[in-house]
Image (cartoon, rainbow, N blue to C red; front, side):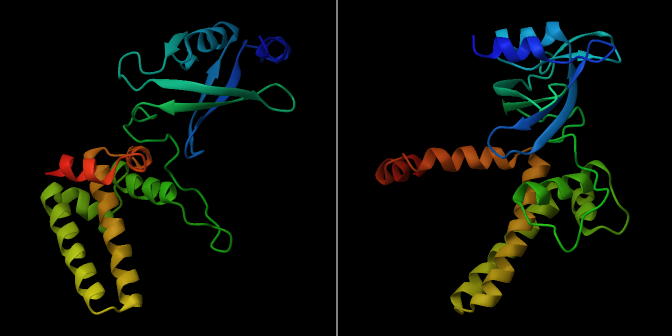
Length: 218
């Protein structure tokens, strides 16, 4: 097969391991950093799902074997030195053992000048406030209060969008939609809904006949 030549040229470290950066195929978000040896790499390719070597347990680790959060492999690419891998996957559930969609949710540094907004970035930031509560954070406050409070805020912000839209005030409507989007994302995290879940649902809808969709909603 085509992968065989590259696979034979891979450089494993002194412990027989190679780092594998796992990336979401759809969003390109980095999900986790794990390690493979020659055996688990071969198993990954053969089974079409991520199989790692657990350094702490010193054993083969099939991602999702107990949690059900399996990662189906789309591609595996080696870097220029052939001593690191990028594994693109379609994931079924959170990638992190904490329940987070990605293992990377603790900001260390963000440039005010160069940072760009992404929905995944906002999701990670909000999720971080749930997994690692911060005193004085409004987001942490919402999670502490629970689902009823979050739903109430979504309802309030929806009303604000309607009021602004009815006035045809574009600037105010943009502001209120942004507030609503934030609170909806808080609700998503509270319920364990990922950005990818919404993306997949929207991807399905462009092939659904309008009439069929209406009948389904009734």
